[in-house]
Image (cartoon, rainbow, N blue to C red; front, top):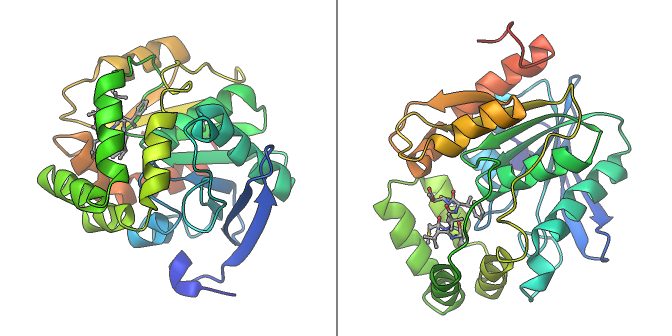
Amino acid sequence: MRDSDETGGGPAVPFEFFSRDGTPLRGFSRPGPGEALVLVHGVAMDRRIWAESGFLDTVPDARVIALDLRGRGESGRVGTAEGHAVDRYVEDVRAVLDGFGLARYSLFGTYFGGRIALRVAGVDARVARAFSFCAHAERVEIPDEAVEEEAVAVEGPGGHTYLREHFTGRGAPPWMIDACSRVDPAELGAATRGLRYGSEQQTERGRPDQELVLITAEGDPDMAPFHAGERRLGARLWLLPAPTRVRAAAHLADAGHRVAKTLAAGGTGPGVV
Ligand SMILES: COC(=O)C[C@@H](NC(=O)[C@@H](NC(=O)[C@@H](/N=C1/NCC(=O)N2CC[C@@H](C)[C@H]2C(=O)N[C@@H](CCSC)C(=O)N[C@H]1C(C)(C)C)C(C)(C)C)[C@@H](C)c1ccccc1)c1nccs1
């Protein structure tokens, strides 16, 4: 099935691979002459966000590979919090890298997808660059009660309304709000509880020549962990003209334009300011 509107016009080829634990992973790949760019969505999202946010149109030369993480989109359902541990997501992404069999990839992830991308970069030498949109690499405290409360809210019959109202209230763009209602509430609850299995850990650099880019809103009230990433990991920091991380989502395509320039210039080095 070639679903051209899914990839902003180019012919998309569906793929299916199996994660280490047997979970089927589905997504699309869109041909391109340039770098292989693997796209990793966030918790309440799926692979359709890349076309719907306009990001896909900003990287016409990249060879794009976009998966649905387990429990989302057309990938296999999980149902348990343990099955949504961060290391399962790392295995999901690595299974897709194995499936395409290339020696070198760039990764780009949104929110928790960015955290997953950084974690894959830390353990997989095939990752030449990792871009994390609005998620940093430092250790976080996961407040069990708040996360449990959020899991109860998102998994219930009102889960989609809860997310839509919460994100609308924080100025999220339509593509992000629409994505929430595509996610199975039971998987949303499991994925939320799954954040208690490893997502708090900081990530390390995987190779000395790996290029790491952290992206956040210039108005982000909590810049410290992003600056920590600059110091600790030698990451570059890109800032978007937005007051918060949620509102930065409206600028995802702008980040895509910078990614395209970076990939064309062959690095994130001084050539691209
Ligand atoms: C500052 O936070 C924001 O700017 C929103 C932003 N979040 C994050 O960047 C990161 N997270 C958080 O900082 C916090 N984590 C939460 N719960 C975990 C969590 O994230 N979710 C569980 C449900 C799922 C929809 C997702 C989520 O989106 N919930 C939002 C609330 C919006 S709807 C209810 C949400 O943050 N809630 C918080 C509560 C504590 C309020 C429950 C801590 C505890 C990790 C610090 C997230 C990338 C991450 C980073 C590292 C490890 C795990 C997760 C967004 N991410 C996606 C879109 S906006």
